[in-house]
Length: 586
Image 1 (cartoon, one colour):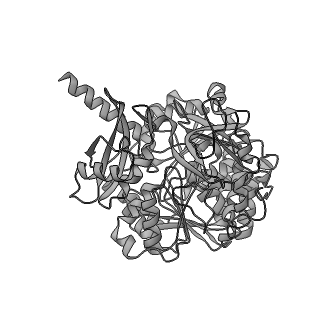
Image 2 (cartoon, one colour):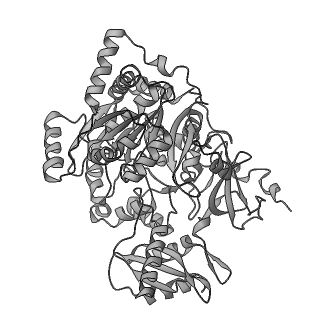
Image 3 (cartoon, rainbow, N blue to C red):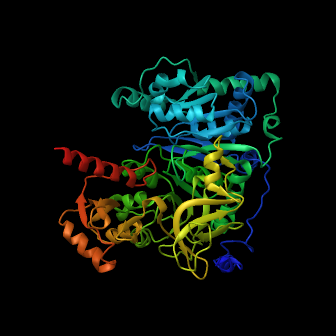
Protein backbone atom coordinates (compact mmCIF):
# COMPACT_ATOMS: atom_id res chain seq x y z
CA UNK A 1 0.00 0.00 0.00
CA UNK A 2 1.35 3.41 -0.93
CA UNK A 3 2.03 6.04 1.72
CA UNK A 4 1.91 8.95 -0.71
CA UNK A 5 -0.70 10.63 1.50
CA UNK A 6 2.14 11.44 3.92
CA UNK A 7 3.27 14.09 1.46
CA UNK A 8 -0.11 15.42 0.34
CA UNK A 9 0.18 18.54 2.49
CA UNK A 10 4.01 18.86 2.22
CA UNK A 11 4.35 19.19 6.02
CA UNK A 12 7.65 21.08 5.77
CA UNK A 13 5.98 24.16 4.27
CA UNK A 14 4.74 25.17 7.74
CA UNK A 15 8.31 26.27 8.47
CA UNK A 16 8.59 28.53 5.43
CA UNK A 17 6.76 31.44 7.04
CA UNK A 18 7.92 31.01 10.63
CA UNK A 19 11.69 30.50 10.46
CA UNK A 20 12.68 34.15 10.92
CA UNK A 21 11.45 34.87 7.40
CA UNK A 22 14.00 32.35 6.13
CA UNK A 23 11.66 31.94 3.21
CA UNK A 24 9.59 34.84 2.15
CA UNK A 25 6.00 33.87 2.09
CA UNK A 26 5.42 30.64 0.24
CA UNK A 27 6.56 27.21 -0.82
CA UNK A 28 7.72 28.65 -4.11
CA UNK A 29 11.19 30.06 -4.64
CA UNK A 30 11.55 33.73 -5.45
CA UNK A 31 11.98 34.15 -9.17
CA UNK A 32 14.32 36.89 -10.31
CA UNK A 33 13.64 35.58 -13.80
CA UNK A 34 17.04 36.25 -15.26
CA UNK A 35 16.91 34.54 -18.65
CA UNK A 36 20.51 33.31 -18.30
CA UNK A 37 23.50 33.38 -15.97
CA UNK A 38 25.28 36.11 -18.00
CA UNK A 39 22.24 38.36 -17.49
CA UNK A 40 22.62 37.87 -13.73
CA UNK A 41 26.39 38.50 -13.88
CA UNK A 42 25.96 41.77 -15.78
CA UNK A 43 23.23 42.95 -13.40
CA UNK A 44 25.52 42.27 -10.41
CA UNK A 45 28.40 44.16 -12.05
CA UNK A 46 26.10 47.12 -12.70
CA UNK A 47 24.85 47.09 -9.10
CA UNK A 48 28.20 46.67 -7.32
CA UNK A 49 30.79 47.93 -9.84
CA UNK A 50 33.43 49.54 -7.55
CA UNK A 51 33.05 46.96 -4.74
CA UNK A 52 35.70 44.28 -4.31
CA UNK A 53 34.36 41.08 -5.83
CA UNK A 54 37.26 38.66 -5.37
CA UNK A 55 40.44 38.44 -3.33
CA UNK A 56 42.89 35.57 -3.65
CA UNK A 57 44.59 35.10 -0.27
CA UNK A 58 47.77 33.03 -0.23
CA UNK A 59 48.97 31.17 2.91
CA UNK A 60 51.54 33.92 3.60
CA UNK A 61 48.96 36.69 3.22
CA UNK A 62 50.02 37.77 -0.29
CA UNK A 63 46.91 38.73 -2.20
CA UNK A 64 45.37 40.14 -5.34
CA UNK A 65 41.94 41.67 -5.88
CA UNK A 66 39.35 42.38 -8.55
CA UNK A 67 36.32 44.64 -8.35
CA UNK A 68 32.96 43.78 -9.87
CA UNK A 69 33.65 46.19 -12.70
CA UNK A 70 37.08 44.65 -13.39
CA UNK A 71 35.70 41.10 -13.35
CA UNK A 72 32.98 42.20 -15.77
CA UNK A 73 35.37 43.93 -18.19
CA UNK A 74 37.96 41.14 -18.13
CA UNK A 75 35.37 38.43 -18.69
CA UNK A 76 33.85 40.46 -21.55
CA UNK A 77 37.28 40.59 -23.18
CA UNK A 78 37.77 36.86 -22.72
CA UNK A 79 34.35 36.15 -24.25
CA UNK A 80 35.36 38.19 -27.30
CA UNK A 81 38.64 36.26 -27.56
CA UNK A 82 36.77 32.94 -27.50
CA UNK A 83 34.22 33.97 -30.13
CA UNK A 84 36.28 36.17 -32.46
CA UNK A 85 39.86 34.85 -32.22
CA UNK A 86 39.19 31.16 -31.57
CA UNK A 87 35.93 31.20 -33.61
CA UNK A 88 34.06 29.15 -31.01
CA UNK A 89 30.31 28.91 -31.45
CA UNK A 90 27.40 29.00 -29.04
CA UNK A 91 27.24 25.67 -27.21
CA UNK A 92 30.93 24.82 -27.68
CA UNK A 93 32.32 23.12 -24.60
CA UNK A 94 35.21 24.97 -22.93
CA UNK A 95 37.00 23.35 -19.98
CA UNK A 96 38.53 25.12 -16.99
CA UNK A 97 41.11 23.38 -14.80
CA UNK A 98 42.49 25.44 -11.94
CA UNK A 99 42.19 25.95 -8.17
CA UNK A 100 40.52 28.97 -6.59
CA UNK A 101 42.20 32.15 -7.90
CA UNK A 102 41.28 35.44 -9.60
CA UNK A 103 41.59 33.89 -13.06
CA UNK A 104 38.89 31.35 -12.29
CA UNK A 105 35.80 33.61 -12.12
CA UNK A 106 37.08 35.63 -15.09
CA UNK A 107 37.43 32.48 -17.21
CA UNK A 108 34.09 31.05 -16.05
CA UNK A 109 32.17 34.28 -16.63
CA UNK A 110 33.85 34.79 -20.02
CA UNK A 111 32.91 31.30 -21.18
CA UNK A 112 29.28 31.74 -20.16
CA UNK A 113 29.11 35.24 -21.69
CA UNK A 114 30.42 33.76 -24.95
CA UNK A 115 27.38 31.47 -24.99
CA UNK A 116 29.65 28.47 -24.57
CA UNK A 117 29.20 25.55 -22.17
CA UNK A 118 31.49 25.46 -19.15
CA UNK A 119 33.19 22.19 -18.21
CA UNK A 120 34.59 22.25 -14.67
CA UNK A 121 37.66 20.03 -14.28
CA UNK A 122 39.29 18.96 -11.03
CA UNK A 123 42.92 20.23 -11.16
CA UNK A 124 44.03 17.20 -9.16
CA UNK A 125 42.86 14.79 -11.85
CA UNK A 126 45.36 12.29 -13.19
CA UNK A 127 46.22 12.21 -16.88
CA UNK A 128 43.80 9.34 -17.42
CA UNK A 129 40.95 11.20 -15.71
CA UNK A 130 41.67 14.38 -17.65
CA UNK A 131 41.69 12.52 -20.95
CA UNK A 132 38.37 10.81 -20.16
CA UNK A 133 36.62 14.05 -19.22
CA UNK A 134 37.94 16.10 -22.16
CA UNK A 135 36.85 13.39 -24.59
CA UNK A 136 33.49 12.74 -22.96
CA UNK A 137 32.65 16.46 -22.92
CA UNK A 138 34.03 17.06 -26.41
CA UNK A 139 35.86 20.12 -25.10
CA UNK A 140 37.47 22.21 -27.86
CA UNK A 141 39.28 24.71 -25.63
CA UNK A 142 40.85 24.61 -22.17
CA UNK A 143 41.91 27.23 -19.64
CA UNK A 144 44.47 25.62 -17.34
CA UNK A 145 46.75 26.59 -14.46
CA UNK A 146 50.46 26.49 -15.33
CA UNK A 147 51.03 24.03 -12.46
CA UNK A 148 49.29 21.28 -14.43
CA UNK A 149 50.63 21.96 -17.92
CA UNK A 150 52.92 18.91 -17.94
CA UNK A 151 49.99 16.54 -17.38
CA UNK A 152 48.11 18.18 -20.25
CA UNK A 153 51.11 17.95 -22.56
CA UNK A 154 51.22 14.19 -22.15
CA UNK A 155 47.60 13.59 -23.17
CA UNK A 156 46.59 16.57 -25.32
CA UNK A 157 47.04 14.68 -28.60
CA UNK A 158 44.42 12.15 -27.45
CA UNK A 159 41.74 14.78 -26.88
CA UNK A 160 39.57 17.07 -29.03
CA UNK A 161 41.10 20.20 -27.46
CA UNK A 162 42.32 22.59 -30.14
CA UNK A 163 43.10 25.68 -28.05
CA UNK A 164 44.92 25.98 -24.71
CA UNK A 165 45.02 29.11 -22.55
CA UNK A 166 47.41 29.15 -19.58
CA UNK A 167 47.23 31.25 -16.43
CA UNK A 168 48.84 31.39 -12.99
CA UNK A 169 47.66 31.63 -9.39
CA UNK A 170 49.21 35.13 -9.24
CA UNK A 171 47.21 36.49 -12.20
CA UNK A 172 46.24 40.13 -11.50
CA UNK A 173 48.33 40.42 -8.34
CA UNK A 174 50.44 43.58 -8.18
CA UNK A 175 53.60 43.32 -10.33
CA UNK A 176 56.01 43.10 -7.38
CA UNK A 177 53.97 40.55 -5.44
CA UNK A 178 53.38 38.54 -8.60
CA UNK A 179 57.09 38.35 -9.45
CA UNK A 180 57.98 37.24 -5.91
CA UNK A 181 55.19 34.64 -5.81
CA UNK A 182 56.07 33.24 -9.25
CA UNK A 183 59.73 32.96 -8.24
CA UNK A 184 58.82 31.07 -5.08
CA UNK A 185 56.49 28.70 -6.94
CA UNK A 186 58.93 28.11 -9.80
CA UNK A 187 62.32 27.84 -8.10
CA UNK A 188 61.65 27.17 -4.42
CA UNK A 189 58.51 25.01 -4.46
CA UNK A 190 59.17 23.71 -7.98
CA UNK A 191 55.39 23.76 -8.46
CA UNK A 192 55.43 25.11 -12.03
CA UNK A 193 56.79 22.49 -14.47
CA UNK A 194 58.36 23.18 -17.82
CA UNK A 195 56.32 22.36 -20.91
CA UNK A 196 56.31 22.69 -24.69
CA UNK A 197 52.62 23.35 -25.16
CA UNK A 198 51.48 25.65 -27.95
CA UNK A 199 49.42 27.80 -25.60
CA UNK A 200 48.24 31.38 -25.16
CA UNK A 201 48.69 33.28 -21.90
CA UNK A 202 45.40 34.39 -20.37
CA UNK A 203 46.74 37.93 -20.14
CA UNK A 204 47.40 37.92 -23.89
CA UNK A 205 43.95 36.48 -24.62
CA UNK A 206 42.36 39.25 -22.52
CA UNK A 207 44.37 41.97 -24.25
CA UNK A 208 43.45 40.53 -27.66
CA UNK A 209 39.78 40.66 -26.71
CA UNK A 210 40.07 44.25 -25.51
CA UNK A 211 41.76 45.31 -28.75
CA UNK A 212 39.08 43.65 -30.89
CA UNK A 213 36.35 45.26 -28.82
CA UNK A 214 37.93 48.71 -29.22
CA UNK A 215 38.44 48.30 -32.96
CA UNK A 216 35.12 46.66 -33.84
CA UNK A 217 32.83 47.97 -31.12
CA UNK A 218 31.50 44.51 -30.32
CA UNK A 219 28.57 44.32 -27.91
CA UNK A 220 29.29 41.21 -25.82
CA UNK A 221 25.59 40.91 -24.99
CA UNK A 222 25.04 39.82 -28.59
CA UNK A 223 26.71 36.50 -27.68
CA UNK A 224 24.38 35.68 -24.81
CA UNK A 225 21.20 37.74 -25.19
CA UNK A 226 19.41 34.89 -26.99
CA UNK A 227 20.27 32.33 -24.29
CA UNK A 228 17.31 30.99 -22.34
CA UNK A 229 16.89 29.05 -19.15
CA UNK A 230 16.63 25.90 -21.30
CA UNK A 231 20.15 26.24 -22.75
CA UNK A 232 22.96 24.14 -21.33
CA UNK A 233 25.33 26.13 -19.10
CA UNK A 234 27.54 23.58 -17.37
CA UNK A 235 28.82 20.02 -17.56
CA UNK A 236 29.65 19.13 -13.96
CA UNK A 237 31.33 15.75 -13.70
CA UNK A 238 30.48 13.34 -10.93
CA UNK A 239 30.65 9.66 -10.13
CA UNK A 240 26.90 9.94 -9.75
CA UNK A 241 25.16 7.08 -7.99
CA UNK A 242 27.11 4.45 -9.91
CA UNK A 243 30.07 3.88 -12.16
CA UNK A 244 32.53 6.01 -14.08
CA UNK A 245 32.60 9.80 -13.98
CA UNK A 246 29.65 11.30 -15.88
CA UNK A 247 28.78 14.85 -16.89
CA UNK A 248 25.65 16.19 -15.23
CA UNK A 249 24.13 18.52 -17.82
CA UNK A 250 22.91 21.59 -15.97
CA UNK A 251 20.95 24.19 -17.90
CA UNK A 252 20.88 27.89 -17.06
CA UNK A 253 17.45 27.38 -15.50
CA UNK A 254 18.73 24.67 -13.15
CA UNK A 255 21.44 26.91 -11.73
CA UNK A 256 19.33 30.08 -11.67
CA UNK A 257 16.50 28.23 -9.94
CA UNK A 258 18.89 27.01 -7.28
CA UNK A 259 20.18 30.58 -6.84
CA UNK A 260 16.60 31.74 -6.36
CA UNK A 261 15.97 28.90 -3.92
CA UNK A 262 19.12 29.78 -1.94
CA UNK A 263 18.05 33.43 -1.90
CA UNK A 264 14.62 32.46 -0.63
CA UNK A 265 16.25 30.40 2.10
CA UNK A 266 18.99 32.76 3.33
CA UNK A 267 18.37 36.04 1.52
CA UNK A 268 16.96 37.80 4.56
CA UNK A 269 20.17 37.00 6.46
CA UNK A 270 22.46 38.47 3.80
CA UNK A 271 23.20 42.20 3.77
CA UNK A 272 23.42 43.06 0.09
CA UNK A 273 26.84 44.38 -0.82
CA UNK A 274 28.24 43.95 2.69
CA UNK A 275 29.02 40.26 3.21
CA UNK A 276 32.44 38.58 3.09
CA UNK A 277 32.38 34.88 2.17
CA UNK A 278 35.37 32.58 2.53
CA UNK A 279 35.69 30.11 -0.34
CA UNK A 280 37.98 27.34 0.84
CA UNK A 281 36.05 24.65 -1.01
CA UNK A 282 37.18 24.43 -4.65
CA UNK A 283 34.91 26.27 -7.05
CA UNK A 284 35.07 23.37 -9.51
CA UNK A 285 32.88 21.57 -6.92
CA UNK A 286 29.17 22.24 -7.45
CA UNK A 287 28.53 23.39 -3.85
CA UNK A 288 31.09 26.21 -4.02
CA UNK A 289 30.26 26.94 -7.67
CA UNK A 290 26.57 27.63 -7.09
CA UNK A 291 26.55 28.96 -3.53
CA UNK A 292 29.90 30.74 -3.09
CA UNK A 293 30.56 31.91 -6.63
CA UNK A 294 27.16 32.58 -8.20
CA UNK A 295 24.79 33.18 -5.27
CA UNK A 296 27.10 35.49 -3.34
CA UNK A 297 28.16 37.33 -6.51
CA UNK A 298 24.49 38.01 -7.13
CA UNK A 299 24.35 39.54 -3.63
CA UNK A 300 27.42 41.76 -4.07
CA UNK A 301 29.55 39.90 -1.54
CA UNK A 302 33.33 40.06 -1.21
CA UNK A 303 34.58 36.54 -2.04
CA UNK A 304 37.91 35.57 -0.42
CA UNK A 305 39.41 32.72 -2.42
CA UNK A 306 41.81 30.23 -0.82
CA UNK A 307 43.66 28.26 -3.54
CA UNK A 308 44.10 25.22 -1.27
CA UNK A 309 42.83 24.74 2.30
CA UNK A 310 45.34 21.96 2.96
CA UNK A 311 46.99 22.13 5.34
CA UNK A 312 44.26 23.98 7.18
CA UNK A 313 46.79 26.64 8.26
CA UNK A 314 46.49 27.94 4.68
CA UNK A 315 43.21 29.54 5.79
CA UNK A 316 44.66 31.44 8.74
CA UNK A 317 45.60 34.65 6.91
CA UNK A 318 42.15 34.82 5.33
CA UNK A 319 40.54 34.77 8.76
CA UNK A 320 43.15 37.19 10.15
CA UNK A 321 42.89 39.76 7.37
CA UNK A 322 39.23 39.78 6.27
CA UNK A 323 35.88 40.08 8.13
CA UNK A 324 34.61 36.63 7.14
CA UNK A 325 30.85 36.45 7.74
CA UNK A 326 30.01 33.28 5.77
CA UNK A 327 31.85 30.08 4.98
CA UNK A 328 30.84 26.88 3.24
CA UNK A 329 32.51 23.59 3.97
CA UNK A 330 32.31 19.91 4.78
CA UNK A 331 32.52 18.23 8.18
CA UNK A 332 36.26 17.58 7.88
CA UNK A 333 37.03 21.25 7.14
CA UNK A 334 35.11 22.50 10.18
CA UNK A 335 36.64 19.77 12.33
CA UNK A 336 40.13 20.71 11.13
CA UNK A 337 39.58 24.39 12.00
CA UNK A 338 38.38 23.43 15.47
CA UNK A 339 41.64 21.53 16.01
CA UNK A 340 43.71 24.68 15.37
CA UNK A 341 44.68 26.83 18.35
CA UNK A 342 44.86 29.98 16.21
CA UNK A 343 41.21 29.44 15.29
CA UNK A 344 39.80 28.44 18.68
CA UNK A 345 41.67 31.14 20.64
CA UNK A 346 40.78 33.89 18.15
CA UNK A 347 37.56 32.74 16.43
CA UNK A 348 36.13 35.01 13.71
CA UNK A 349 33.92 37.57 15.44
CA UNK A 350 32.13 38.54 12.22
CA UNK A 351 30.96 35.00 11.38
CA UNK A 352 27.21 34.80 10.82
CA UNK A 353 26.68 31.30 9.44
CA UNK A 354 28.71 28.33 8.30
CA UNK A 355 27.03 26.24 5.61
CA UNK A 356 27.70 22.50 5.64
CA UNK A 357 27.12 19.98 2.90
CA UNK A 358 28.81 17.33 0.83
CA UNK A 359 28.88 14.76 3.63
CA UNK A 360 27.24 14.19 7.00
CA UNK A 361 27.84 16.88 9.61
CA UNK A 362 28.69 15.29 12.95
CA UNK A 363 26.66 16.66 15.88
CA UNK A 364 29.82 16.90 17.97
CA UNK A 365 31.41 19.17 15.36
CA UNK A 366 28.29 21.35 15.05
CA UNK A 367 28.02 21.70 18.85
CA UNK A 368 31.69 22.57 19.28
CA UNK A 369 31.56 25.08 16.42
CA UNK A 370 28.67 26.96 18.04
CA UNK A 371 30.51 26.90 21.36
CA UNK A 372 33.77 28.23 19.87
CA UNK A 373 32.49 30.59 17.16
CA UNK A 374 29.17 31.61 18.67
CA UNK A 375 27.20 31.09 15.45
CA UNK A 376 25.66 27.99 13.87
CA UNK A 377 26.56 25.55 11.17
CA UNK A 378 23.47 25.15 8.98
CA UNK A 379 23.52 21.75 7.32
CA UNK A 380 22.00 21.25 3.90
CA UNK A 381 21.82 18.49 1.36
CA UNK A 382 22.19 18.13 -2.36
CA UNK A 383 23.97 16.51 -5.26
CA UNK A 384 25.82 17.57 -8.36
CA UNK A 385 22.74 16.42 -10.25
CA UNK A 386 20.57 18.92 -8.34
CA UNK A 387 22.70 22.03 -8.88
CA UNK A 388 23.15 21.17 -5.83
CA UNK A 389 20.73 22.28 -3.06
CA UNK A 390 17.75 20.03 -2.30
CA UNK A 391 17.27 20.54 1.45
CA UNK A 392 18.34 23.15 4.02
CA UNK A 393 18.10 23.96 7.71
CA UNK A 394 16.33 27.30 8.26
CA UNK A 395 18.86 29.65 9.86
CA UNK A 396 18.03 30.14 13.52
CA UNK A 397 16.03 26.90 13.56
CA UNK A 398 18.78 24.34 12.86
CA UNK A 399 18.15 20.76 13.92
CA UNK A 400 20.95 18.44 14.92
CA UNK A 401 21.53 15.45 12.65
CA UNK A 402 19.01 16.76 10.14
CA UNK A 403 19.48 18.03 6.60
CA UNK A 404 16.38 20.13 7.20
CA UNK A 405 13.45 20.65 4.89
CA UNK A 406 13.14 20.74 1.08
CA UNK A 407 14.05 23.97 -0.66
CA UNK A 408 11.13 25.98 -2.08
CA UNK A 409 9.60 24.50 -5.24
CA UNK A 410 11.15 21.12 -4.36
CA UNK A 411 9.45 17.81 -3.59
CA UNK A 412 11.24 15.08 -1.64
CA UNK A 413 10.09 11.55 -0.88
CA UNK A 414 11.46 8.44 0.85
CA UNK A 415 10.83 5.28 -1.18
CA UNK A 416 11.58 1.56 -1.13
CA UNK A 417 13.27 -0.55 -3.82
CA UNK A 418 10.06 -0.49 -5.89
CA UNK A 419 9.76 3.29 -5.72
CA UNK A 420 6.85 3.11 -3.25
CA UNK A 421 6.73 5.64 -0.42
CA UNK A 422 7.74 4.03 2.89
CA UNK A 423 5.93 4.55 6.22
CA UNK A 424 6.82 7.64 8.22
CA UNK A 425 10.15 7.34 10.03
CA UNK A 426 11.33 4.29 8.13
CA UNK A 427 14.52 4.45 6.01
CA UNK A 428 14.41 4.42 2.26
CA UNK A 429 15.99 6.05 -0.77
CA UNK A 430 15.68 9.83 -1.04
CA UNK A 431 14.18 10.98 -4.33
CA UNK A 432 13.67 14.60 -5.33
CA UNK A 433 11.90 16.66 -7.99
CA UNK A 434 12.26 20.36 -8.73
CA UNK A 435 13.50 22.99 -11.18
CA UNK A 436 17.13 22.50 -10.06
CA UNK A 437 17.29 18.84 -11.17
CA UNK A 438 19.66 18.23 -14.08
CA UNK A 439 18.60 17.68 -17.66
CA UNK A 440 20.46 14.37 -17.60
CA UNK A 441 23.94 12.92 -17.97
CA UNK A 442 25.77 14.26 -21.02
CA UNK A 443 25.46 11.82 -23.93
CA UNK A 444 24.60 8.98 -21.58
CA UNK A 445 20.95 7.99 -21.89
CA UNK A 446 21.46 4.68 -20.08
CA UNK A 447 22.77 6.28 -16.87
CA UNK A 448 20.21 9.09 -17.17
CA UNK A 449 17.41 6.53 -17.20
CA UNK A 450 18.76 4.98 -13.99
CA UNK A 451 18.96 8.30 -12.16
CA UNK A 452 15.85 10.09 -13.50
CA UNK A 453 12.47 8.35 -13.42
CA UNK A 454 9.27 10.26 -14.17
CA UNK A 455 11.06 13.51 -13.35
CA UNK A 456 12.33 12.25 -9.98
CA UNK A 457 16.05 12.11 -9.20
CA UNK A 458 16.97 8.90 -7.39
CA UNK A 459 19.82 10.04 -5.16
CA UNK A 460 21.26 6.75 -3.92
CA UNK A 461 21.12 8.16 -0.38
CA UNK A 462 19.19 6.50 2.43
CA UNK A 463 17.13 8.81 4.62
CA UNK A 464 14.08 9.19 6.82
CA UNK A 465 11.40 11.85 7.19
CA UNK A 466 9.96 13.05 10.50
CA UNK A 467 6.28 13.78 11.00
CA UNK A 468 6.80 17.51 10.52
CA UNK A 469 8.74 17.14 7.27
CA UNK A 470 12.36 17.25 8.41
CA UNK A 471 14.68 14.86 6.63
CA UNK A 472 17.59 12.89 8.02
CA UNK A 473 20.41 11.23 6.11
CA UNK A 474 21.12 7.69 7.21
CA UNK A 475 23.86 6.89 4.71
CA UNK A 476 24.81 6.16 1.14
CA UNK A 477 22.88 3.17 -0.17
CA UNK A 478 26.09 1.55 -1.40
CA UNK A 479 27.90 2.07 1.94
CA UNK A 480 25.33 0.22 4.07
CA UNK A 481 26.77 -2.73 6.01
CA UNK A 482 24.74 -5.91 6.46
CA UNK A 483 25.52 -7.67 9.78
CA UNK A 484 23.58 -10.90 10.28
CA UNK A 485 20.71 -9.44 8.29
CA UNK A 486 20.70 -6.13 10.19
CA UNK A 487 21.42 -2.84 8.42
CA UNK A 488 24.30 -0.83 9.84
CA UNK A 489 24.87 2.69 8.53
CA UNK A 490 28.49 3.92 8.80
CA UNK A 491 27.45 7.54 9.44
CA UNK A 492 25.76 6.54 12.68
CA UNK A 493 28.84 4.66 13.93
CA UNK A 494 31.23 7.44 12.82
CA UNK A 495 29.09 10.01 14.62
CA UNK A 496 29.31 7.97 17.81
CA UNK A 497 33.10 7.66 17.51
CA UNK A 498 33.38 11.42 16.85
CA UNK A 499 31.96 12.11 20.31
CA UNK A 500 35.22 10.87 21.83
CA UNK A 501 37.32 14.05 22.28
CA UNK A 502 40.59 12.25 21.44
CA UNK A 503 39.30 11.31 17.96
CA UNK A 504 40.00 13.52 14.95
CA UNK A 505 38.09 11.50 12.34
CA UNK A 506 37.13 7.99 11.36
CA UNK A 507 35.96 5.80 8.50
CA UNK A 508 33.63 2.87 9.12
CA UNK A 509 33.32 0.11 6.54
CA UNK A 510 31.95 -3.38 6.15
CA UNK A 511 34.44 -6.23 5.78
CA UNK A 512 33.47 -9.80 4.76
CA UNK A 513 32.95 -12.04 7.77
CA UNK A 514 32.25 -15.78 7.78
CA UNK A 515 29.91 -15.64 10.77
CA UNK A 516 27.90 -12.46 10.17
CA UNK A 517 28.26 -11.86 6.43
CA UNK A 518 29.92 -8.50 7.07
CA UNK A 519 31.66 -7.09 10.12
CA UNK A 520 31.91 -3.46 11.16
CA UNK A 521 35.50 -2.16 11.10
CA UNK A 522 36.53 1.35 12.10
CA UNK A 523 39.68 3.13 10.91
CA UNK A 524 40.43 5.98 13.28
CA UNK A 525 42.76 8.99 13.26
CA UNK A 526 43.50 10.35 16.75
CA UNK A 527 44.15 13.98 17.63
CA UNK A 528 45.78 12.89 20.89
CA UNK A 529 47.13 9.56 22.11
CA UNK A 530 45.86 7.46 25.03
CA UNK A 531 42.73 5.92 23.50
CA UNK A 532 42.72 2.17 22.82
CA UNK A 533 40.74 0.18 20.28
CA UNK A 534 38.79 -1.42 23.13
CA UNK A 535 37.94 2.02 24.53
CA UNK A 536 36.29 2.93 21.22
CA UNK A 537 34.42 -0.37 20.94
CA UNK A 538 33.07 -0.07 24.49
CA UNK A 539 32.05 3.56 23.90
CA UNK A 540 30.07 2.56 20.81
CA UNK A 541 28.38 -0.28 22.69
CA UNK A 542 27.07 2.23 25.23
CA UNK A 543 25.45 4.29 22.46
CA UNK A 544 24.53 1.76 19.78
CA UNK A 545 23.05 -1.70 19.46
CA UNK A 546 25.81 -4.26 19.90
CA UNK A 547 25.72 -5.38 16.25
CA UNK A 548 26.47 -1.80 15.16
CA UNK A 549 29.58 -1.45 17.34
CA UNK A 550 32.90 -2.00 15.55
CA UNK A 551 34.21 -5.55 15.76
CA UNK A 552 37.66 -4.16 15.03
CA UNK A 553 39.29 -0.75 15.39
CA UNK A 554 42.51 0.16 13.59
CA UNK A 555 44.45 3.39 14.07
CA UNK A 556 45.73 5.15 10.94
CA UNK A 557 47.80 8.29 10.57
CA UNK A 558 45.44 9.70 7.94
CA UNK A 559 42.41 8.76 5.85
CA UNK A 560 42.08 9.12 2.07
CA UNK A 561 39.86 12.03 1.08
CA UNK A 562 38.43 13.78 -1.94
CA UNK A 563 39.72 17.29 -2.74
CA UNK A 564 36.76 18.77 -0.83
CA UNK A 565 37.49 16.67 2.25
CA UNK A 566 35.05 13.76 2.00
CA UNK A 567 36.53 10.63 3.53
CA UNK A 568 36.76 7.98 0.83
CA UNK A 569 35.32 4.87 2.44
CA UNK A 570 35.63 3.11 -0.90
CA UNK A 571 39.40 3.56 -0.88
CA UNK A 572 39.66 2.56 2.76
CA UNK A 573 37.78 -0.65 2.01
CA UNK A 574 39.86 -1.37 -1.11
CA UNK A 575 43.09 -0.94 0.88
CA UNK A 576 41.87 -3.19 3.69
CA UNK A 577 40.70 -5.95 1.34
CA UNK A 578 43.93 -5.74 -0.66
CA UNK A 579 46.00 -6.08 2.52
CA UNK A 580 43.90 -9.05 3.65
CA UNK A 581 44.34 -10.77 0.28
CA UNK A 582 48.10 -10.18 0.38
CA UNK A 583 48.31 -11.56 3.92
CA UNK A 584 46.52 -14.77 2.89
CA UNK A 585 49.01 -15.36 0.09
CA UNK A 586 52.00 -15.13 2.42
